Image 1 (cartoon, rainbow, N blue to C red):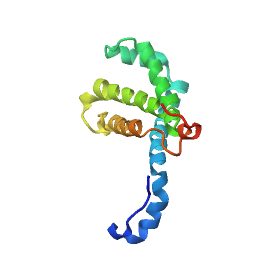
Image 2: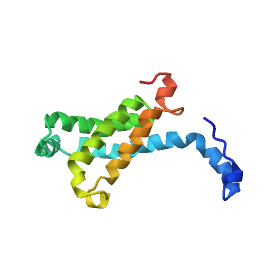
Image 3: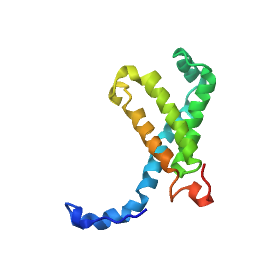
Image 4: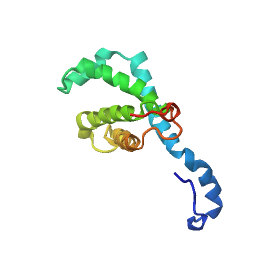
Length: 152
C-alpha cells in the first residue's frame, strides 16, 4: 500500500508531507480508535453495573437466552473491543461488535430514529460501518495479528 500523495492535486500542496507521514498509520489509528472508544462501555458494564439489569433489558425485548446475551454483550464490549484496538483476532472481534451493533440498531434504537441525541441509531451505525470495513481489511500492518504472522 503506497502512501504517495500527489501534491499537484492538493489545494494546499504544502500539506503533502504531512499527509504522506500520517497515511501509513491512518488505518491502524482508525482500527485502534474503533475498539478503544468501545472499551469504556465494557469497563462500565463489567465493573460497575449488574448483569441482571442487562438480562432484564434484553429479555424485555423478547430476545432468547437473555442472560447469555448479556454476558456476550459484556464480553464483546470489553474483550472484543480490546482485541480490535490492538489488532488481535481482528476479524472475529469486528464481527462480534458488528453483530452487537446490528442488534442494538434493530431492536433497541430503531424506534428513536437516526440521531444519537435522541437515542437513535447513529452511534451504533457508525460502529457497525467501521467494523464492516475492518472485517474486510483485517488487522493491518500495525496489529498483533501481523506481528504473530497469522490472521483468521
